[in-house]
Image (cartoon, rainbow, N blue to C red):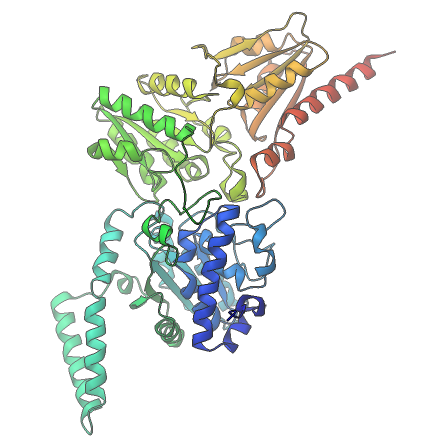
Length: 625
């Protein structure tokens, strides 16, 4: 017998309330099937979404969305939410150009309240929205769904410390699955484990209370007496309740996050409490898909895969894996080499390092600021720390890079992974800004390898330069095929001269492959300048560049404040008359493929050719009598 397509009948959350509990359970099974089928084709975040199916369904049944506000932290667990809010028919376009975003996006749907691509923001957002509702006289609820991994981020505690004072209708749902991307670490993880261990006690207590309360004649009186006595003893002995209650929240839980009836009762109870509530829900990351349940870290964020055999480890090396292997080799030779990451050991290629050198591997949780300051302190005591972090997340550590590394003059190496476009994850995950903000840091030196060999050489060289901060920025994925046999040089710059060239193309990193290919196709000779150390600029290279009639700078990073802008400014300061053209990224990049991102930004081979030929032709036509 064919099963009913319940998702096709759900046009908005109100339709959920028409279903019986058995029908809702069938719906949850269907949602898991759709999630697995879709992500196996589009790629995306699978295990985190499989873990919150019942929780998301229960919230949508009990809240009045979009009048009530549901916030996700991190937003990659919002796929079920999208399916329940009128986007089922477009779900196959997930993370594709012109399709659905992999994160909440208010421009996509009125049910998406706030962009949430980075972790630990929801409590601060919830405080602000609840305050605005209160000032507008609104009585609706604000609900923040935050994972225990996101609760390791410092911003979450800034929000938490203010949330307890908010008088509006505010509920925090703590999705406790013992994971962020990698296994959770630190005090918060241990504290939540302790709370989880109380679950059996709480169930036993509830059964005892139910028996006492239903005892004829004296039951309710006896229950009240026992409860008051127990509370008095507990307060006398411990003088405190849970950490969350001490911060002004009413704590409920732990609750089984896959039991719809229990979840429903807990959410209804939370709505009756006239102060901010924390509802602690325990879920299983990857539930419903065997491979994801067994390896939730592998299926946190995946490319397309065959769901019958699961994700097969890629044999092809990437910049991340080469970085990790190089770190292992350096650590073998030098006991002072240490690796620091922020819940990204697998993503940054450090899993092998963590297994081989556990005493010198430090996963600090989702705490980039702490990672930078922690590493600087290590460097002040004659260690050689390398902080491996995605470009988009390094933005959070800017203050610490300036104050705790640069001003101190400590030798910390920042391994900036996913630098440049990271198309599939959309606007919030682009690595477009690190070059611009890092070059403002006093004493900072920034390298940009174009292939694996350069990455190995630069990492080793930077690790043993004893002065100040270094950054090595490299992209997601592998080296360009054109550059596999490219032999790097130790100089700050590499020239590809052309006899009689009046046109110069300047670039850095892996974009060098496309720029060099475009230069070969031009109908006139064009030289190419590759910056190996992109900051500080090589003054001699700037002076040499100024001798050309046309200078084009191509950069897969933000235009404003970037390396290209600095290069052009340096040329102008010398009073040169060269025509300078900068081609960089203007604004965020949406969900798309790598090839689409290059075309959208004009930084694919054809776009580079078009830019050069158009500018040169216009200049020649203007110069003609």
